[in-house]
Length: 94
Length: 485
Image 1 (spheres, rainbow over the protein chains, first blue to last red):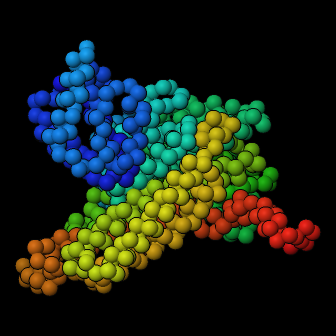
Image 2: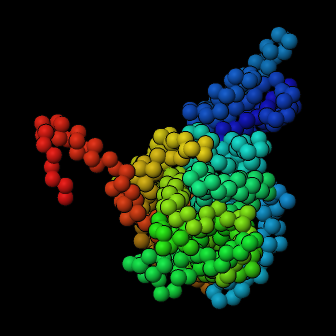
Image 3: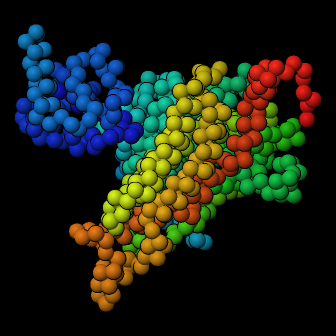
């Protein structure tokens, strides 16, 4: 499944956003092909925000399916499951 | 050529060949000189972060002139959200460098000049704004680094520019030609100038008619004939020449890397001149630049303070004092002070206003309050960091002592902290605190973007004192006017 990764700007993050992405990426293995947001051809977006303000969330919700995380409390495998679950659901609708 | 990466930036500096002196010696290549490398690394972060997915949301913007994605440090603020993102970006970059990264000065100069040239043209029918827009398009396309040149050395402060025994203590026009002007003078405290490509010269203060030759705004490539820079000394600057441990923050600078810049009869073509004699706008440009620059300080110094707070907490852990209630209280106080200055920067941005040019401008009173708080809070944060770290901060041996075959074992043994933490790492964190909280780093917080009294002057003008008196008299039931002092 193709998924775009998007980070907030990171002005004052509560956790290491890049580190959590690498953990999610490792957990996903081959099940997800990661793209940049401008590559378009994706089924969902993983949005990693450094705090609950989640600045980019509102703009992205209007354009695509977004799995948004704002803390590092969720185990990576559950984030991956959320991404894949939502992606498959969307794929079934296509 | 568009500068995208750090390598592009370094190459551009190597090729530009500007004249700069360090300790009496002409520097052939700033990118290879240990006194300059840390500052260059810090400025390079503004390029690197624009390419990093985890920062691009803040570090880039869409140009209102071309629709292209550009480095935000070349952007003209188009909304209140842009003003807020500016502050957020500065905090984020400071987290990466722990020092000044210099590029906000030119950014603020571009924004202030953008607004003011529009107003000059409206009054005088000049074409300064169109010229500035063309210059800005070039800067956005090439991603060149601009230094904002405001502060003249000013000589005798009791005299106006035209009254000075040596008029060159203020930058001024010495010749007007068909193809341009010739300027002479200086700019002091030029943050980032040693590793910039262009300077955007602005007047240093409000001017009167007799000073119209000093009411000058123009852009000059830093490799122009007649531009000479002299690098300023900094606290512990020779540590950059030695080992990495002693410098505290080995990759990045202590402050911005400031120079005294001399203009020895420098030619400027008319298309790069944005104010030349419109003395009544000199004060406006100064005030706008100052406000935009004072807006920044809760962002960058908030970010720098985050590092100092983190380092203080780590130092406390390494020496076993982290559990003490007074240490926790001091760390909490440091956070309070840091978030207070950040709140100031966010608030003056949130209360920003649209100017006639279309560019957005922070609330000037709140921006000045922010900077005034920075002149106090950073000193207090530094004081608390010194308190938490302990006297060892001022008495640690050299890196070479730690590495000495003869005495290294004693340094290792007697400067050890809690079990499991190496003495070297303890020294590293203490040196980082020392680097960020002493000497030049503090003075930069005091005088950068204007000394404390300049903010007080703004309070007198912007503080709405008449309205405050009226409200007080209404509540007190006073109807007659008080005699004016």
